[in-house]
Amino acid sequence: MSPSESSAGICGPTLPSTPVPADTTADVLLAVQEAAQNGVCTGAGHAVHVAVWPQGRVVSASVKDYGEGLADDPSRVCPPAWNTHGRGLHLMRRVMDRVAIDCSDGTSVCMRRHSLSRSQSA
Image 1 (cartoon, rainbow, N blue to C red):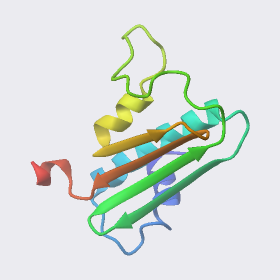
Image 2 (cartoon, rainbow, N blue to C red):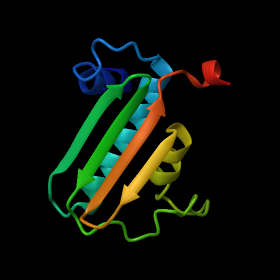
Image 3 (cartoon, rainbow, N blue to C red):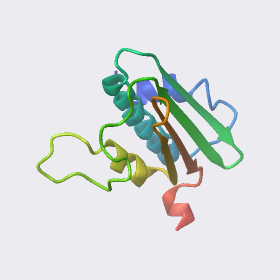
């Protein structure tokens, strides 16, 4: 499935009446995919819950899994270049305006992105 097909399937039913710029939709989709992949990998077979919703000019997303939580410090900026994985949190922080992580009961990742494109807000 191509990214455009998956974004239509994920974002289409959730954001039908709210005009959201394409770059915002792509960034939210990328961040949600990264968080959901982390949940699948660390969730120990438990369900991963994903929600995306508009709030005025902000698109919010939440990804929750019930595994043992993150093994690494989620405040870490970016792993060393020689690591073959571990860039998802860094990537989420680069494309979203706010990323909050709570590891007290599994892992919850809550993200927000202002719906103006980066070029419009600059």
